[in-house]
Amino acid sequence: MRNDLTRRDALALGLSAAALAATGAAAQTPSPIKAADVPAPKLPIEKGAFLRMLRPVRFVQPDEDVFRANAKRFTDATGVEVKVDFVGWEDIAQQTAVTANSGAGPDIIIGFSDAPHIYVDKLIELTDVADYLGKRYGGWLPLAQKYGMKSKTESWIGLPFGATAGPLIYRKSILQSVGFDKVPEDHAGVVDLCRKLHKAGKPAGFALGNAKGDGNGFANWALWSHNASLLDEDGNVVINSKETIAALNWVKELYPTFIAGTPSWNDVSNNRAYSSQEISLTANGVSLYFSLKNDPATRAIAEDSEHQLLPKGNAKISPMAGLTLNAMVFKHSPYPNAAKAFLQYMLEKDQYEPWLNANSGYWAQPLAAYAEAKVWGEDPKVAIFKNTMNSTYYDGYKGPISSATGAVSADYVLVQMCAAVATGAATPEEAAAEAERRCKRYFRR
Image (cartoon, rainbow, N blue to C red):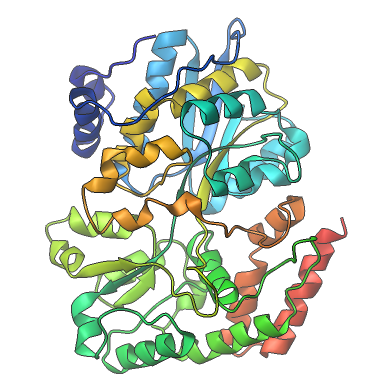
């Protein structure tokens, strides 16, 4: 196989300067990433194979540039054409549902987190590829195992490509102006800080709308930091608990300190508000810092920004999961071997390392060996994202992942519960009871 990507190839593919730098550096500098010499699975590619793939749109341009370049290299090496379409984050779940229910459409979809568990009966098993990659690259990290394997089995139904965390990002100078060097770890301290930021005219803002990443991320943080959870370890719905009520009361206390409009925020709203200096504190992936840093007009904001893990509250560790890119292959594909070979190729070192580096920390690796990638040593403000997939928190925590937990997330049950209390549409007790009712409807199916 041809494993080099020349500058001429890159220019022909329209790669950005950042992506060119990433792929060029990988070619010129010896990689510290170790790959074990283990036999690859035999995947004879079907005659006339052609693949269609759907995945979420990039938040940083080099994500798409290098991904497309790698897909072309697979075509050059195998003769299998791969058509990759990028769609909005809010659209990927709906299009996955249509594909699964119709039995037609893309061969491969990279969905989010627990998506393969929603459509497990529609997917082919990926255990042979997952076992190979795990042995070759130091093992799969905890969050990758949780989302990749069918619950209570050793069977892989998804191949995680990476995860993005949503830690806090804040303006150092503004926090210092109200008497804080960083965000407190306790709930009362967070409220105190946010009240002072609001009074200073530089409030906080967290999504309370149907935002796949930011909305669910805030709701999960509120719950998990109070030791609340959707399920217990046996899979029983326990959302209507005293811990949840405490979390909702905290949200009710915190919400008046937010900038107006957060109940309608989507996944780009807080980026815009922070970039325009309307807010001084939010939670987001590295894309916000990346965009600020690479725009001369906002570089000073990036220099004044810091990341911090979500405050622990009552939890023992920062209760932060990672929104995970999770690839699945559908049974209706006439080319399952080609699909598996493509995913394996994209996760091999020669392709994956340049893609990981080009993302500048937005996606963090699912395989242990890639922790040595150069991206994690380039900027101290990005290093916080390195261990995203070491997290033990996940959608559906603390129970087994299933189609029901996926449906709860996709239906925004938890974020809508928080929003109802924040806006005064329901009391904490009413909102928790309604969330319990909605959740049990899914778990009865």
